[in-house]
Amino acid sequence: MWPLDQGFFLFVIPAMLFAMYAQSRMTSAYNRAFRILARTRLTGGQLARRVLDDHGLGAVKVERTDRHLGDHYDPRRRVIRLSPAVHDQPSLAALGIAAHEVGHAIQHHTGYAALVLRNGFVPIAQLGTNAAWPLFIVGLLVGADTGILLMNVAILFFGAAVLFHVITLPVEYNASRRAMAVLQDGGYLRTEELGPARQVLDAAALTYVAAAAAAMANLARMLLLRRSRD
Image (tube, rainbow, N blue to C red; front, side, top):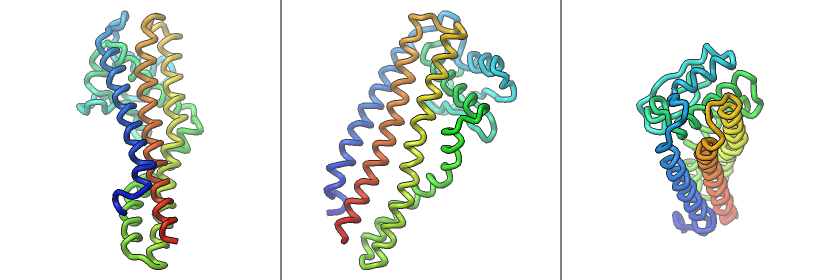
């Protein structure tokens, strides 16, 4: 039945459809908010620099990256990297995304527990993501006790990757809450401007929910395939 097994239809396809919906919602919210310029005319890069300085994080750098939607905070180098559309533009989408990445920098500075836990899981999650399925497929092909052992190990590896995705959710939602508080309390956005920025962050958070759902769907598929070997 591999690769079109029962688990693929029961778990993976619904997760794929959910991911497509989440990405569509993200694209729609981003495009709407990108067309609206903020009253302050601050670019995302300027906003990030100001907010970091206001929170005593002058050592954190703000850099422009050429990657589209490559916005992220690098805790190892203490750098916020913003894509051109965010770094250079004064749109509500740019300010919302920049504030979100600043939220991660503030989490790092304050030792936010979920972020510390997630960062510790990164190498384990990478190993689980890269090794689990190849190991599991070999286990399916080998058969007998050796195959079952390989599948069990693969499930443990992939379970670590799933846990990483689950831990990521509170980290991302907390960064978005911090971002909205910064934008509102700092007076960077008017009341009527907060809605479109919040929609971008909510839609972005939904993509992380979809990623977690996809990981759990694949784990459920693995467990179902493993059970069929008993």
